[in-house]
Length: 201
Image 1 (cartoon, rainbow, N blue to C red):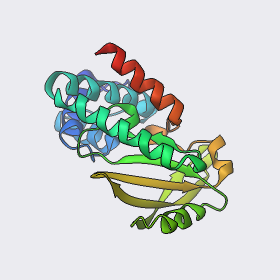
Image 2: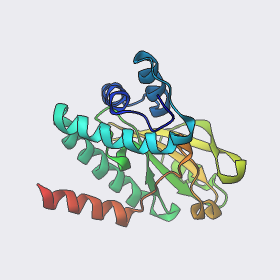
Image 3: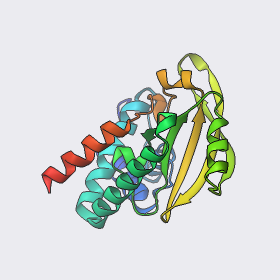
């Protein structure tokens, strides 16, 4: 490829792979698709390629995976329900459920904010909610990195990842795939999104 964004052939092949496996990393899907088609990706267009791939995944699911729409709405409704439960921690929805590329196997990811972040753990203990802890490293502009506690749990058969941040971290979202800032949505924004979808049906 002559130094430009990923061609449509790469995007479509990567979109199909991501639609069939919601856990597949988008950057990895693009690299594998390009290698299969014997094309080279220009790293200068990583962010653009990621955004175009997200749009291509939505289109693929709309055409070939119509049941995905109902699954996505269910996950968004459960996310809104959870955000009301965690209202004290200013929850923000992120990831595939917000982007619209999730399917019924996807995990709902929420960013929660508290001082200290471990206050969320105490809240879960008080509510007697079982969970599993792990860590995830996030990257920020300027090369800064930060490790955050991730709490994994299941509610109403829906898997959740709760990522715990200090309250100050709500002002700056970390970077996601391709170096773009991770989009976040408040409960009010998610409710608006659901209402817009209902109007279209």
